[in-house]
Length: 498
Image 1 (tube, one colour):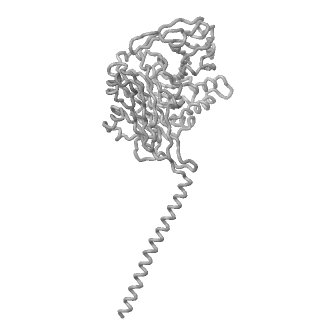
Image 2 (spheres, helix red, strand yellow):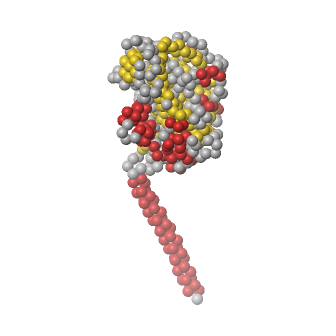
Image 3 (tube, one colour):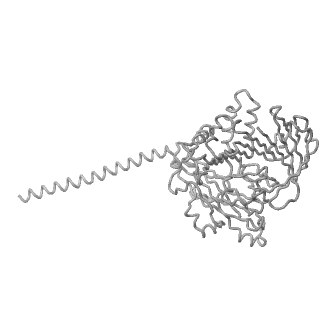
């Protein structure tokens, strides 16, 4: 197993001093270091536990991504700019004609997510299958049984390492059948350190005497050309090197941070046709010529979008959207929640920025856009009269044409298959806006959906049945009375004639 640990110190923070980093053979001690941290593990197929082998051997490519939806800030993030809507995202490309039944069984057993089959639970994007779960508690629930399965009951140190992944701001697992390797990447925000003040106090050493751990403590390398990220700092191979070595690296990056923020919430009152309004503080210009501003939505049940409504260009323009580029997933307009097996739908929208940019110098006001949504009927409940429905905020980003796209693969922190990047040409790079959390601790918005109380509904059912029976008896009695009355009159008339 290969292991790489990177600490990324913001330019606003003091650069790591000699006292903060102490390297002895086989051990690196780090004290009071305020930094973003990335841990990367690379395992070969032969090193994987058998139950993981059973899952990945049915896939050509598999990505499991998690984002905790918090710890957003507007400081420099270097190569760690990209994020996803909060929750768990799974992207799976089957190996040849495989139905990936082992992946479905894994999801059901460890994540407790209903999965009768991949076709029933995942939405299809060509051969690629996608599952989304807007629940930040899923990851800890997965890792607890996995720690026992991987480490066994007696290996506490091993369990602690696995469970520590649940505290990460984001976590990626990627398997590639071509390279036969599984990469695990975990990123912690600069305020997520293990010390009381959020900094890092750690000792890093190889698990085995034969292992080596690559460690880097880096910060911004200063001004660099467009599309390029430059880093400088110190590197060491713990377990091999006796001293930290100075380093200066630069590489074209697919993802960059834009110093712009946005917030989202529902228009109130919401009703059964809510609208999510997103407010952006953009500034007055785009990152480069030819860029488009986009929003990527994951829309879980009970929400849904009306694809016919989204095709109305005039209506979308009034909502600040230039065009809807993609709608994938469940868009049935009539079905209730209990009739749907898939998780929901995704929407990629290109925003209308022309008028905003042309008038920004004069108005200096935020930009707004709105996505119209609808709510499905939800199951009844014996005690509740409403349910909370939660919608994750979208990811908002600029997509720009790249001149150095062919060199992006040299980026040691490159990140692909995020759900939206596949809808853009390969020669594209992205500038990400930062969600600003003010009235919420997570990047999501919630509303209360009225539901039918099942106890009251039973009384209603019996009452309705009673009314129907009484009505039937009244109609039947009226008909019978009239029939018998008319029969008696006919007998009297016949007797008089005789």
